[in-house]
Image 1 (cartoon, one colour):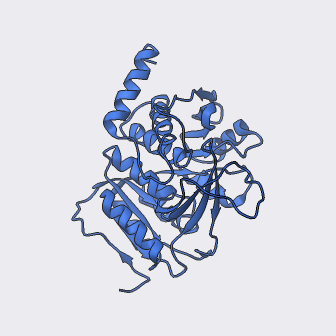
Image 2: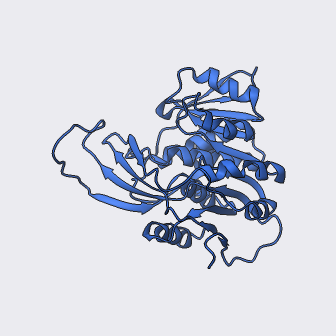
Image 3: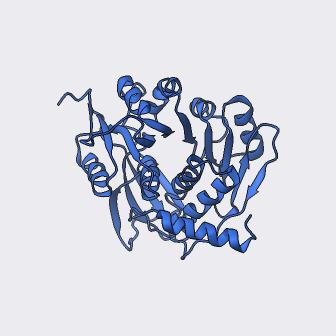
Length: 322
């Protein structure tokens, strides 16, 4: 196999057979449950329920969430010929999510997630597993985009280089800026190219100002700032009213916030791609995100379509249909 070429899955497909193409964000996390965050300095800590390594970073979890909701999902990213890459390949095979991989000589992305008793997370990313000139082959991007109705772009260097091909393809785009501070230049091309922009408000000095700046300078029809237990804020234009989206109570005790943002994106996209109003989309995202908070980091899971629809119907009934 030529390591510069893409390895395609064996699925026979016709034109426009992919609802959502997810680009980037494939990798492996090592989960460490710690007694508290920040972790006090000590010579050692006894860790229970233990330390576990599993496949699943942001792109993997968005793809899983969309797949569980019944959307035809395809994942494209760079992977190494290493044990971590084997875990990612097995994850997609076991979940039934088609994967196109491009060989990454630097190795598969990996991180260590420290998770506190309240479910908060601190992630340590291995910055050696990638280079500024990493590329997804343009012809591969174009070919998959031509089969897709929508593309969700992870915040990685290969995806940054792929933005022009994606825009030229005509597919709608979404991206998640995660904990952007509103200033770092790296995030701006993603923020300004996407039709839907998601981001956490946790690191923003002026959340509303940042959302309005994205809406004014970019092409987004909706900008969504998530704030964990405080809910989210939705903006549909630079001069539009900033709408608060209340948080949804999780259906079980909160054990981990890892993946909640990815689940929110998947739930929102599921409704948005069906033509639902953006406020309804935000409700779908909130329900999916709340469910994710009940899933331990050591397990890959996402809410299914029937459960999502039932909970949205219950909440809308309780609020008189709003």
